[in-house]
Length: 403
Length: 64
Ligand code: HEM
Ligand code: SF4
Image (cartoon, rainbow over all chains, first blue to last red; front, side):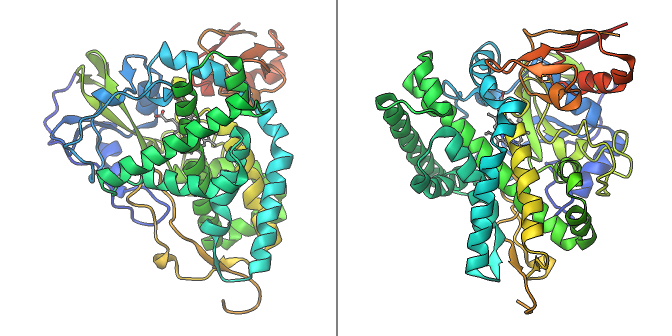
């Protein structure tokens, strides 16, 4: 076991291009895939950048996802806010056995088969939005017109959120997940969201519906706060993620026209392209775990109470697992990427996200064969400041005009 | 090749079904893994091994 002599560094955040993770991560991985990390609150913890080590941490029950014991590495973190335990039902931040109980109640709703059955509805929602775009005419912001509303409507439908309320939801989610907003704004957004969901749960209690939330209500095993929090988690985890994969994925395809062309010509390659984009873009750049006991990782001694920042973006560019990791190659087997995490918290909604991306990206390119960027690449605002990476806006145009 | 699944640790992520649909299925009720082919033909070995590898909860084991 080596004693670490290197000084802890803060989390690297400077991206060289909109599509690549900070170069510093690759350097650290090359030096040592487990390194010391300085957290804004003064804590000294760890940063894990190797694929094998990331998998190891995420599969190890001695690491906890609990909020109240973790330190946040993001530069803008409010260090004066004491971390509080996650409320009941927010199972991403619970360890077993609480996590197990909630996850079990939900997995049946998210099976591969069930999600595939949703494909037709996802196609309908996609076509509606493409129609609207055509009607509106170029140029437009693809995030606002397509990447955001499609996943919002899909998950809203899954939960049984009335269509007219989805817009308000999306704005609230964006406010909650903003890294740089004030604590008061965050709290206000949080409360607005809670209220909305509580009302939704109440409505379903009064009048049972045939959707995911309606099913959980009817199951009778969960109390109101748990139901509200589960709905909160699903919306929070399912909206911004999928929206940003569609937005950033489209950005990548439009700035690499040969890849867009290949996808148009060969619709069967869709699933492989999506999987490779998930790996390459890894829009959830990192997640956090805190050691519950002293343990060994990659030759280092991790002490109980130390927080480990697990770099999914770095792991998914690990050349040991993905040769030529910085190249998008739909022919590689991107299986084993960690874009959806690993271990017991691996993304519950991943099959739904896959269906959405497999439908939305090819449909967009097919509907608008001349779709292209309306501004230079460098003018697209990226979500450097957000917990989920992507683009704030993506101005696009099509047709023969210069847009 | 013989395959075993541990339903007590399965988290219903569905990776096995995507990787080797001939061998794995998901219980429509609770989403947990169901083994539809406990002794898969040798031609499926690579994919079954992949499924065991990508399973996020280590629920799949292969014995010879
Ligand atoms: C491309 C889109 C998506 C990406 C990249 C993504 C990524 C992730 C990642 C990395 C985790 C693990 C976090 C951790 O271990 O700390 C996760 C967990 C989760 N995701 Fe997703 N996700 C996506 C879409 C969705 C959708 C559409 C839903 C719901 C409908 C969803 C629901 C969840 C839930 C509930 C968890 C927590 C699971 C648990 O703790 O057991 N996600 N997601
Ligand atoms: S991949 Fe593993 S966790 Fe997921 S359904 Fe199959 S056995 Fe269960």
